[in-house]
Image 1: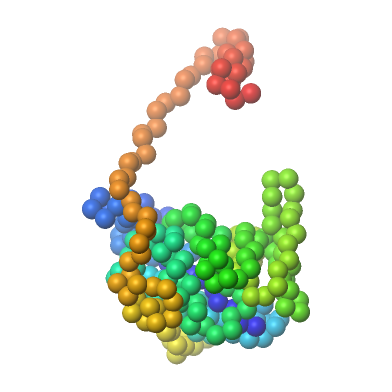
Image 2 (image 1 turned 90 degrees about the vertical axis):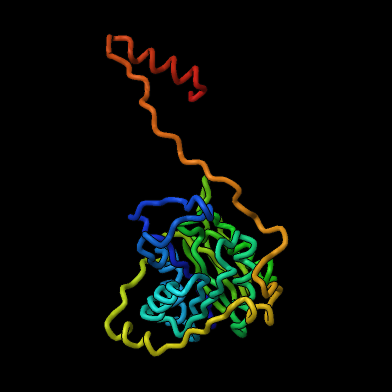
Length: 262
């Protein structure tokens, strides 16, 4: 089984978040860049499937030069090789642009059976790229799965809904996005870290992707979304305080009714 895992390098969630007033993009340089935890969980599931079915795990990431560190981390965890989409023109890509570039990059991996990704990254929270990839690659999609297995070329999984659990099936190849319940990521060992240094990473720029997918070599897409302005969150205001004079319960009840909360 050949599995491609999308991994994303994101600012550490413990670091403060800000937006560059000039580019209107998330400021990434001051924050420590780490592999997104949901990517690690998707990779862990891929490694488990390789142990069960054999085959190859390829980690794929789009980002600047420093994204190689996250690819190497994935290789240290056990992935076999990596694909890095890296071009200055990719900076600030919206969801459609990102999915188009990733689809072109994934098309360089022959006979892929599964494409695994997290259901949403911690820096963007769009959660739409896996479904877009399925459409662009003309593959089945199974999104936001908390568990799944593959038997005889058929994926069977489950998705949590508000009113229960939904069971789904799809015939390979399939694009799958997973939730944090899918697997507990492992830690890289010393042997894995040393071996990762010798594993291959294929780097693809805009010109390279233009030869395998519908990508403008300039890296620009017609109709791409553009951020025009950014407004800071308003400062928190103090709430109304009720002094308990024996009627506070009634006052709270009246307030909730007036606000349509009950």
